[in-house]
Image 1: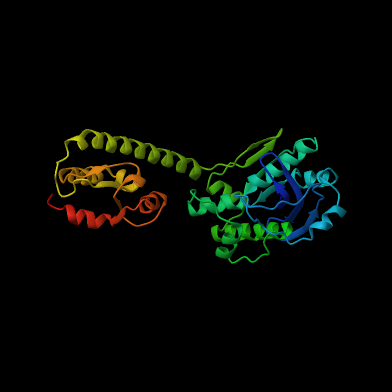
Image 2 (image 1 turned 45 degrees about the vertical axis):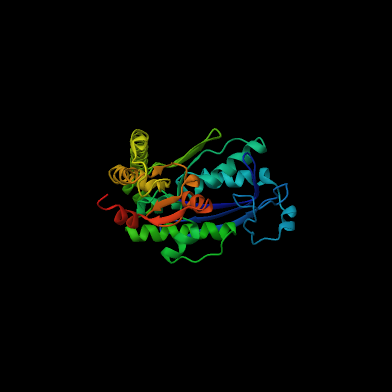
Length: 318
């Protein structure tokens, strides 16, 4: 059994285009001894447009871009990459591997080459399962720092090497190997076959999705319950009370806590105030802490910010 860790850099990435300029890989044995490592540089046959997700200034690759014209295009290196990834007794792994697999898939389509066919794992996904944290993605540098691994970012072969060392550190902390991590967290590998990509999954991810969807449904029910209460009772509010003419709005987490939000809004109505779901139309915005788009919209419209505990104190006994 051998491990192949790989990383890809692209000259440009758009929705249906990914022009690969570097394929870096490290081949290691089961004890993470490096058997082979190489940075395969590729002529992307296109301009370099390295932007971030918002279209602004992106990463700077540690290469001389003009040099890429000297190298062969993707079809020339395709057999070597295929040999690496489809080799027998090979475990393929990367960091955020789905993205790199997608780039490979797009390049095979671009040059009308046969689809790659291999299974793959992901050190980022290993880390997410170990931390039981699926709501955010962890960058390679963040993971490397937390595990004591050093590397130079964005040189493909160095990223592949750092990915290997991160995987080695994860295995060491768990006292196992890659197969042990896969078994412990019930991870199903991703698959590229016939130009189709199946993503990785695990028992932890599946449970996270179940819990997330249940929480989302609970928030939707709470939202509906709160606004039914508001619509039913706002017309009954006291006229001429101390809050007459004042329009309130709560932060979403307060609205979703129906036991609290209904009690607060009832007290507001009892003092003559009204309620709106549009924070930009309120006079008073209530939240536990100041911050977020909803709060900023209220402040931009001239609303006063009052911490939740201050409102609760002011309404005591109302």
